[in-house]
Length: 171
Image 1 (cartoon, rainbow, N blue to C red):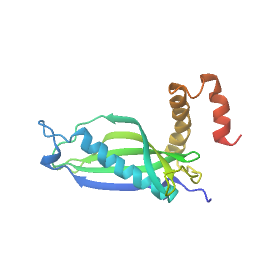
Image 2 (cartoon, rainbow, N blue to C red; image 1 turned 90 degrees about the horizontal axis):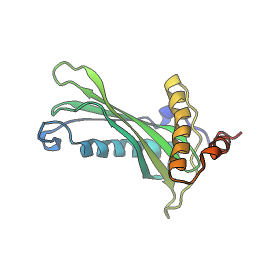
Image 3 (cartoon, one colour; image 1 turned 60 degrees about the horizontal axis):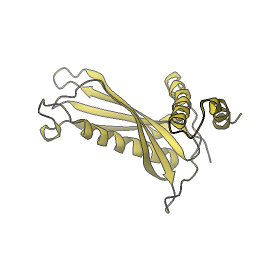
Image 4 (tube, rainbow, N blue to C red; image 1 turned 30 degrees about the vertical axis):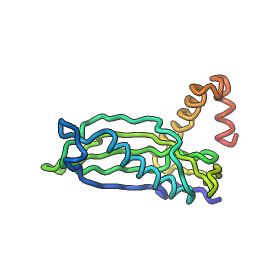
């Protein structure tokens, strides 16, 4: 299985915020944005794995800025790390002001997807090779996030994090 880069999975989805997608303050509903992010991250995971992918978890979502009606929203997603059958997908959400055209980073999120076969059984995914400094930062952070998730789920003791790191890093 040939390793891939984050750019191989990069997915861009651009759309306009319509009045029917907004709350009483005329800002995009959080759930609408979550659905857009889920679709973009699903495409990114599928591009990386070339398999059916299912959402395993939404690890982090930061709603940093309200997105007003009429804004153009671009969701950028790419795989930040691949493990055995799971992939972390990092998303950046940009909004474009409808009057000035200025782009602002509005939100970000981290999703985890699992590649499965036709019967729903998890299947191996290609390794990921980060290229840019940002990709390397997100790649390294993904291992720490996975370890923390396992510790919080009581599937790993904090002292085992070193052993888990060696396993994932192939050491």
